[in-house]
Length: 145
View (cartoon, rainbow, N blue to C red):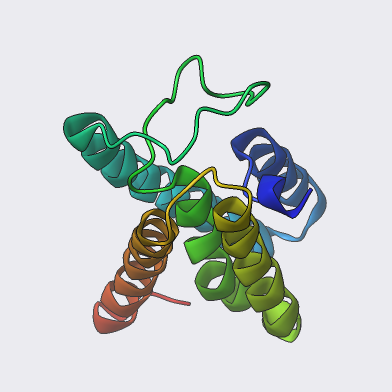
């Protein structure tokens, strides 16, 4: 189950629910998180479909193997890399929970043999770097955070 914490449809539903539910300042932060996750995903999938590194094992019943047979970098880990950076920016009190979910998911993806360790580390680094760079750029430009 932890391997699915980074599922795209789950996070899209959570982001859209947050945008619909929270006050305007929080809404804008959640929207920024969603947009940065899309940017990170574009980077990840550009690398993934250029390198075409196979997964450690072909897994029967793996829901995305029909459209995503490649392992490096991990898209789930990319979303999980945005979680402790952007999630803590939006909801600072939940930062320890976000770190735990993030690390548990990338561990599970490796433990199940869906990815090599390098796949999840690279994906996580892409998500965290895109998020961190965007927040640093926004702060440097004097944008309200």
